[in-house]
Length: 290
Length: 191
Ligand SMILES: Cc1cc2nc3c(=O)[nH]c(=O)nc-3n(C[C@H](O)[C@H](O)[C@H](O)COP(=O)(O)OP(=O)(O)OC[C@H]3O[C@@H](n4cnc5c(N)ncnc54)[C@H](O)[C@@H]3O)c2cc1C
Ligand code: FES
Ligand code: FES
Image (cartoon, rainbow over all chains, first blue to last red):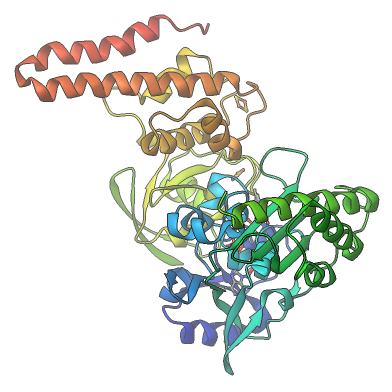
């Protein structure tokens, strides 16, 4: 690897200072499962790597009456091995437990997945349907950005110079909330999504009507896509097969895939519809407590 | 250079390492333990797997500097001076290796699984080992060896439990434990 310095800030302030000092010659390091691969491949010409894992906020998981706050550098296994988190945030668990293999999950974080800003990132869409917000620190203080507004292009995002993500916040889901994420890959494990779809629903108390819904699509556009029209259309509709089929068709219409080595435009659009149907069905089942 | 103080296979270690050196290169070139292997250098093959602070990691995707204050176990730390780790013994008996380049990674991954889930079933074993690739064996023999190691470990711990229950039976229990290993060794289908 190209020689770089290693900086280990202990506070958010120190991290902002280090990142500001080196500018675009520094990158934050969470699990390193994207960063070190890409650095080795020559994508960055770094003067410094800033390890965020010694900053307590970046490594804590807090679950309380307001919801969940996950440090941006918390590795996936700490998310899915937490029984309380997995019960309340099923969409996040679906993603955290399918990123890479066990070795990768020991290191890879949801914050790193988001900040790498790949359209195929498996954690970003589930974070969108869980109404996630990124808490960002930088030279000008702290600000919040909704996950669906975070990515701006392949490998590009809303972070300005010297900024980094501190935590990911998710509001506490109501008891009638359910979510799910599924992806299509040619293997069983360890592959990049050809298509991924995350869905969430909040049902009425009887479990019959959809009060709120969110659908997000991975790997079918330059950024993870929040399928607004399909999500909005579901509000007030009965939680049944006909509604699911219609929303899935609308999600398909929102997909803007390209043809590449992983799949064609046609195949990807088809997969969006199939996976939207499956994840909506699963989200509704989970919302009903099944 | 980064100053690193760590524990490797139970022994304290202290060294200087260039900031950009991977943990894999650190272990192999600075520490001098060559069990962990370099395969792909991008997190796919698992040949470089070590245990860092209780979790298996691809050491090619960790910086050596990050080991500071941590605890590392490599394949060299699995056996005791008296005996191979049950997994190593089972790999020999089941001929779960051919060229062997993937073997240290599989052993370390599987050892971490057995420690937390001593009775993992075949499906779980295959899922756990998905981050380790083998181009030679076709995996079945590896999975069989892990299952065998689970049986060997549970027999070993049963015989240890007997020792604990009847302190006087100590002398009779340890030959039993070793007979599990030696009978296995003569039964090896390799060669
Ligand atoms: C073998 C293998 C399998 C993989 N499988 C999958 C998969 O199935 N699905 C999937 O989605 N991904 C997969 N990945 C990619 C990668 O593991 C994930 O994207 C992971 O979530 C990245 O997290 P990390 O903590 O390792 O990030 P890092 O590599 O540490 O960081 C990623 C990027 O984000 C920046 N960054 C990190 N943290 C912050 C922060 N807090 N603020 C600002 N910037 C930050 C870094 O500078 C870097 O550019 C795989 C990778 C490998 C090597
Ligand atoms: S060399 Fe590290 S995973 Fe292949
Ligand atoms: S024995 Fe050759 S790669 Fe596994």
